[in-house]
Length: 285
Image (cartoon, rainbow, N blue to C red; front, side, top):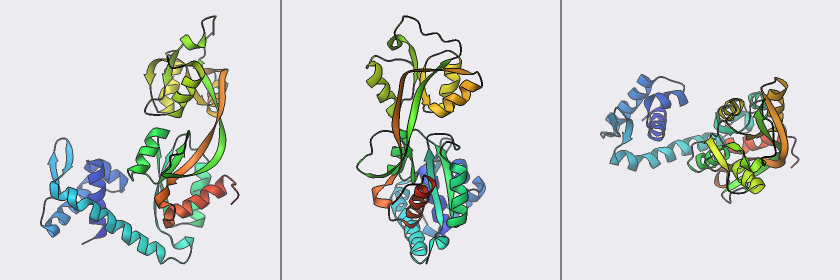
């Protein structure tokens, strides 16, 4: 039994799609399909029901999935525990970001990882706070940046205080109508930004649209459909380009955290990444 067959099985089970699994594993759908077929032949059982809607686990597949994941985890743990230093740690850290790569110093982080722990690669996905926490609990990502309260099942490092402002389209004029009556582009799916907004103007928010994608919210604001909260540095960049205006009435600061699951802080890859995050943000032990 090949480990890459098990890895393909686990990723297809999580994505339900050969194409998505192939993207995550940097290969092709036919290759993933061949891995699954080989594993099914070796185990002499069907793992998936194939349909136009994707790949659904069979009852036997559901039973075998946790064991396949444990086998992969154990194999990687064995390799990493045998390592004498960080240069021998291998694995992939799945990272969720909620700001631009530049704001979060991602190029510097990747360069540092290449130098200090070259056996570790980074898989980066943009996610809002709520989705990041959900993905950590579902083992879909290993860690990421969030705003708001830290759940009890997470370990957090405070990396900075983030300034938040309100963005409007460039023709916007605040009249005698109070800001509470304005239309808003909210974040949705549990985002602390929406909670902050409620604390500022009350629960009766006129939300005309919700998006946890910052570029989508920017475009909606530029179109004059409503106001939205935005990280100050990014907002100033677009203001300088003449695309939006900033409204400082509701400005506030909030901590930005890097979080991982409590039960994984001693995983060699995650432990090494936490150290790199501390170095990146100049956080003292």
